Structure formats: C-alpha cells, structure tokens
Length: 404
Image (tube, rainbow, N blue to C red):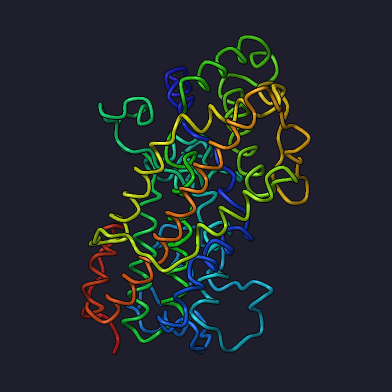
C-alpha cells in the first residue's frame, strides 16, 4: 500500500510560492492602476479590526479561532496581521488594500493542516492533501495553491495526472475568500470586504502560473525516474528525488522571470506592461470559482511546453541533487545557472511570450474580479452569502442567529 501511495504522490506538484510578496502585490497594483480612479478605488476607507466584523456574525464564529476553524485554515495564523507599508495607518484606499494584502494566503494559513492518529502520527486533514506530499512543513499549502483540471481527451498530456479528476483546492479557495468579501460588504465592513477580495486575488494569481495548473510533464517524470535510479535511491529516496527535480524547475522558472538580468530586462518591462489597462474578460461569470476554473484551464494549456522550455535554458545540474533556493534570505541567482545553447534566443523568446500572455490574462482577471465585486456588492442578503459559504465549508449555521 505504501508503494502505491508513493507512486501516486510522484505525480503531485511541488510548491513553495508562485511569487514572493513583492510580486503578488505588484500584480495587483499594476492591474488596477488604470481603473482605480474611475471605479472609486482611490477613496480612503477606515481600517477596522477583525473583531468589528466577527461581532456581527453568529456567536459560534464570534472570535478569531472559531472563525479560522470554520474557514478550515490554520487558527494559529492571525488574519488581521499587517504589512509594514500599512502598519499604523487608519485610512487606506481599496487600491492600497488590494495591493498590500494580495499576498496574505502565503502567511501560513494554508500550512500545517493536519490531524494525528491514535499513535500520534501526523495525518492529512483534507481529502486532496495526500496528492501533494506531506501535510506539515512549508510545502504543505500546495493543495490549496495548485489545481489540476480533470483529465480531458482533448488535452491528454496537460491534464494527465493521478487521480484523473480535478485535484487541488485553489479554485475553491478563490471562491471562499470572494464570498467572504461579499459577506463583509453586506455587514457594512468595507475594509474587510476589500481585504478578503485581495485574498481571493492571490489564488487567481497563482493559477496563472502553468506550474500551478498541472501536475507533472512526461519529460519531468522520465527525468525523475532516471535521477532516482542514478542517485536518488541512495541520497533522497523515491518521492524526494522527484520533488527535488520538479521543485528546481518550478523555482528556477519563477526566479528567472521575476529577477531577469541584462539580457531580458526589456522583456520584464514588456510583461509588466501587459498587466495594465482597463479591459475585462468578455465572458460573464456567475462566481469567482467559475472565473478561477477558466484561469486554471487556460494556464494548463501551456503545460508541459513551459517546463520543456525551462529545461532547455537551465543548467543540467538542476536535474541532479542540487537544490535551487528561491527564498529571499538564501536565494540562488538564476543567472548563475542559465544555459545558453544555440537555440537560446528562440527558447527564451517563447518562454517570455507565455509569461506575457499569462500576465495580460492576470490583469484582465483581477479587474474582472473587482468589477464582479462592485456589481454584486449589494445584491445578496447576508443570510444567502452565509448559506453559500456553509455549502462549501460544510458546517451548518443558523441564519436566525445573525445579529443585526
């Protein structure tokens, strides 16, 4: 049984973060800058403590611990923590809130969500966690920030994985925080309405990265098996060998795009500009999850092409036991591991074409999400929004307990 589980976990993606805090924030800031004034996102609103919202909810949700428990996130992580750029401010504009707090879901709320069996061993708390590696540690948030579409015969390579159904909770989490935003607005708590919408942004941004919208490409699977037979069997073991290779590819790509050196600074400016504008998606969406699924499926189409491009420009040592670091305190510079072969210019150009397409989509999607929030803000009663959240989260509430 353990061997079967190990084989299944082989096909699970590995995640740290899609972008660091700075880049999540920049994506939101640039995406909204051209519509901010027209949409009223520059009007300051009062910063309010979380308790001002919780006091208006049913009594079983009236404190931070029970509220986090209801949302199925880590209660040890405070939802009202602030960033240095907003700390001490009593007034913030919606644009500032959406920018500053789009990185919130990487604060640990989706990590270390586990239970223990009768022997005290750590067990996954949620159904899809088992497909994404261990339920504790920094990578344990993967099941919330990645989602593979269900297998499709129309796109058999990009949607291939184990299990064949959709796996991951990223689209669901985008919906949860969007509904919480509507809940806060319905309770006359606009600060938390915008802040929860920023949290929904995070998952929409993550899903634009093809590494967050698929599992493993055939080439990576073959490299992983080869690496296991050559060095992984003795040094890392079966699962960790694959985790190292996929993680190296994933982190090299993100660092390379986020911190380009002289040869592609011009491209960085180009893809940043792709985020801006005022256009929206032409399609109407009934929910944030429907929007997120559209993002997921579109990004998935670039998999496995993107990992194949990355493989051509990264140093072959990243297919070995070498560990590429992407955290700020111990970062590997991608330029030191860049491989420029005869096809480098063509490969590099195509890689950044994909990134530009995804950045342009991310700009439209974030603007569309804000437009949805503005259009839906006063259209549903609090009780209806709570019922929708209950249906997702699975814990019944009594609307009649809602305080006026």
